[in-house]
Length: 175
Ligand code: SF4
Ligand code: SF4
Image 1 (cartoon, protein in one colour):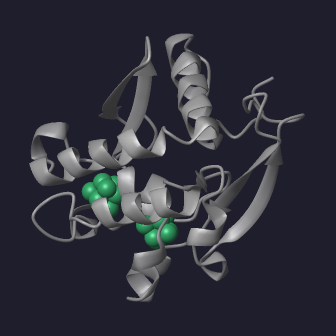
Image 2 (image 1 turned 120 degrees about the vertical axis):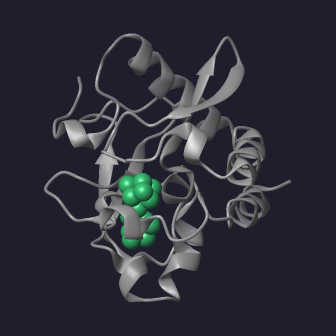
């Protein structure tokens, strides 16, 4: 499968609600609320899947941010509840939005999904729709066949094991 088909397949798999309905009602969409330094990374090659007008986008280059060696830069995207304001925007939300409040984690070549330690999602893993978890896992199994994506997840997982910041909520480059 080429990269575009992989992303299309993953987006399709991840088009299921994470719990019984719109979980944003529970918390006022805190994970989608604009804050200084807050946003998500698009995965390598994902930019052509998303609706870039939804976001304020910046390039985070490897020389300043802690990004794996084979990835020169990543797009860092932030928005302010755009999916709540525009019903068509939701279908363009990126993989990281589709995965939250979970995140992929790799150890010894094995893929897992863990609760994302960033943000304050009030849902526990037990409250999540099982179909969401299963489909999310299948999507990530496909996504990590893209070598840069696999390297990025391995890299972030290593930072987590080392207790180092791995995401921009930390509001600082991590070299
Ligand atoms: S923080 Fe959790 S409950 Fe709230 S909108 Fe995000 S995923 Fe849903
Ligand atoms: S793109 Fe949609 S799901 Fe993602 S942070 Fe923005 S409003 Fe939330």
